[in-house]
Amino acid sequence: MKKLIGLCAAGLVLAAPLCQAQTAPKPAAPAMTLTKMDEAKQKGWLAAWDKEISGEAKGFRKCDSSVGEDIAWQVSPMLNGFYWGYMATKDPKYVDMLVDWTDSMVKRAVKEPDGYVGWPSFSAAGTDIDNLDKSWDADSMLSDATAFRPIVLMASEMIKNPALKEKYGAKGESYLKLAEELYQKWATRGGWRETENGGMISLVLPYGLDQTRTKWMGWDTRNDPGHGFSHPQNKANEVALWMLAMWDVTGKPEYKERAEKWFILLKSRIKASNEGTYDIWNYWQPAGPWDYKPDGSTKHWVGVHPRSGYYEMDVSGVVAAYEHSLVFTKADVDRFIATAKTAWIDGPHASPAPGMLISVVPASGLAKQVNVCFANAKLSEPLSAGPGALLGTVVNCQWDPKTNKGSIVIQPKAAPATQVTVTMTGDDTKIQVLRMWSALLPYDAEIRKHVETTDLDPTAWGANPYWIYRCQEAGK
Image 1 (cartoon, helix red, strand yellow):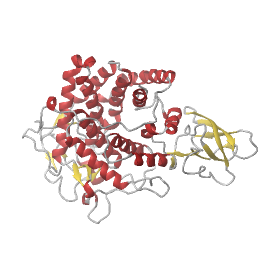
Image 2: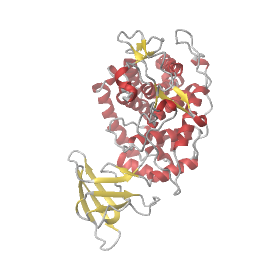
Image 3: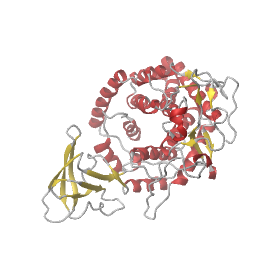
């Protein structure tokens, strides 16, 4: 797709009516270890989640005000919750919630000089590279992608599901039309660039609106040499997930092509180690000459990010590509699973789960350092927490986020065999746990058990019933 898609002068004419789009056949689903969730646990989780999201839908109405990249972090998690809530329960009240939030956002859209709409802001880029967050009043591709992925998926249900079509069918069609227009907006503006080896990446460009919001600033030079800043991997994956949703719903190959080319680039950046794992990859790295300063240095630091959440987004992209039979294979997923069980990073205090191997210092009293890993990790035992460390197995882990305190019960590996209880606090105890990427949950029973017992929180911000839905589908 070296040539950008041409549009009419108004910038709003689609290449073909949505109703004429042919849905592409879905690839065969990969084999999973996923089974149905315990019925009582599922019921309790959904009840607690429903109470939380219903309150947030009324009391945290960021759909009424968020602009720029804030939409991605303040609105999109709720839209995802509404969509997956409907898919897991088939309760149309979640459709109503998504319509309420979507319509509130859409009616605030600003028509820009090229005829497209957006939600511009001076912080739309989410970075001050090239003064992007200070100089340009612009909209955000990331926000369009993260918000319209669940909107597009729900729109498909509205149009195709007989239980929803009469009431919501026309609304769903309008959402799909807008999603296609937003895609055309970014394609026309130069929001993707091709890279070496057949890859492609989304990026932020230095242009925006003037004070009247009727004229462009920097428009004619936005694609000049040296202009532009490639998305970090997590953002590029979010854009690709939007493209996969658009492909799923419309069947149009251009969406598949955008996603596939990004995954080609992503795979080239992730290097295999000799131990059956991957080296943890860089959070950002240059994708082309536009990512370098005139002196030859990169516009952004290159290295591993200490926050594991960014890598959760990356692995979600990898698994989605695999499930669409694009680029990544079962062997790749198996290697990611091995990496998840071996790589270390700072983690939450509730992470040590029963059955995990543990190394802790001191052997009693207040723990300063706690290292844990699965019994079948690539490491035969967890990294030592230091001189005099106690090595054993986690029997129980309790953590109270309100008091910021907790305890771990340990069965020592060596005599004496008497169980030891170690206390910990959020201020003094450092936890080293594995990168338990929840996206791998359908393909490894141990990861699923860990996520369900330590990470699945129905009251957490951004929680949604996605995994409950997946478990339901797998259990049929």
